[in-house]
Image: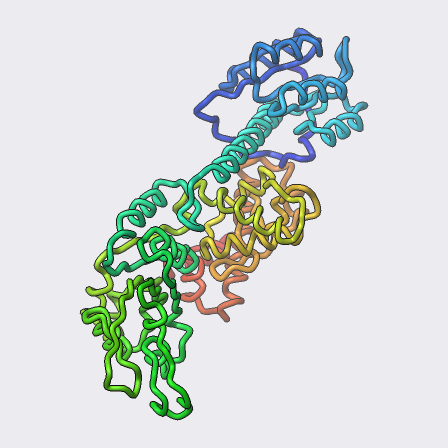
Length: 495
């Protein structure tokens, strides 16, 4: 094949190969030159694509009545129809079709206009290499898949049954829903475990709403937020004069929750003295106000939550073993967001709708690139971090879609996003000019140099943040200290 092209402007030069999908990609080649059409079909077929070919615009439109290709390679100059009108007709007949225009160098302006009105990309003739064509087709097919997936997930979000504000259809969340249904009708205490931001209070509310106590109070208590000297008074109440400043009697939160549910969040931070009183309340169903000898009966369902390992707190003497056993009658372990697969996209659409409505913005979609960034990021702050990220994106977005650059991420060259202001990772953005300088190198060498640049920037930022503390830097990076030192040593050898 004589055709080839200088590397496309919107695709990285020397692109990394994309893995083929398990389901084949159907490509339609539209070109009136038989030799080129046959050559493209042969080359794409050899790479695992299913290929059809036609010689005119009308033949392409007729083809869409019989087949549903994923990508169309379309020549800008056909004997019966110009490229732009054909593009509009193709998109009207098959909205999901991704179109890559092929054009001579002299007609690049028209190709750019084609991209503006809906083409995914363009290739100029003669082509630079077969790989450039394959990469353009693969990227277009991937773009289409991401769009279809986002649409399906959005539809699933609108149709799914929710447990209160809990959203997700992953197998791990299905297990959580099953547990919620199972414990809702019981009276046993429940211990909800999970990282910060995973939605432990939402689980507690869902249990309450599904129980016979749903019409009674639900009282959430953040044990970590109450000053230690006031914990007993807050939970169990006090009488007038019980301590300095107690000028009136006070009803405790357990009494407030009578016949309802009390949710004790961050139970691991409860002081030992309060743990003793809580244990008695769980065992006897009674509370005693601070400064009083009288006991009061309370009928309260107790749900507790923690993001720490209570076993370690038992070992160091800061948490009572008998209280742990009393609380841990039934345990629900919430998965981290990074373990929930496509739930992250469902949640992103939920928050997008929430903040778009609140801010009266027309945003209704995530671009495929934004969806990819959201899906690939590790979300150390879990659902709470995702919510803040989408709010950030809605505020900054300038169009009808949330784009990847609207998210609070930096991006490393292989497309794996890292947070620009995360508690767990730090990276200085690698200048685009640095990537341009690697264009003329073979892919393997360009990647090696770019990875080395990333290592330099990443480790330097971590060491600066930790004032040179290798152990702390390694902890933040999620590496053993020896592995982190090995990276630093390799950098010095390369330098």
